[in-house]
Length: 215
Image 1 (cartoon, rainbow, N blue to C red):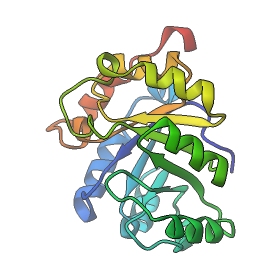
Image 2: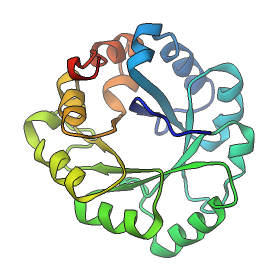
Image 3: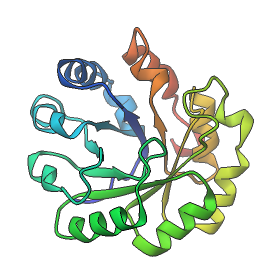
């Protein structure tokens, strides 16, 4: 299984689960083929929803690690990867060590989250994950736009860290995604602006404007 190669849009379902998660996933997979040619759309979901979502939808699934560190059998049930150390569920060093040791035996891609370039660089050097995400805690769930608040974060991180870097917190629209991608980022993490929308598919479509330099 090769890594996702296009601009990665990772939609975090957070506490949305069960029938609500399935309904939301089915809406989001209705994106047109033209959009899918430019972006890889993946979902971060609760572990218990992986089996049904992998059967009923065609979008790549990443497990939101919810504290069951080291449990990676979900790869056999249809998950593509796992997200570790999210700012809302920080792991201890021993938990990360345990999980990374066991994931080495599984077919799961690993995304490790951080809240600063320093932390991202340290975790990347120690664990060499498939992806590193950097989320500004001050922007998570807030109305402030990433592109107007901290675009230099992307350039500085890309210059320092040799990996596929995703950015989250304050990703509200197409300008934020363009800010990340044109500065060398591999993708973004999105949640509230799409998953809490009354029309999530339309909200996502508005964000996924082709980036001229990449088309």
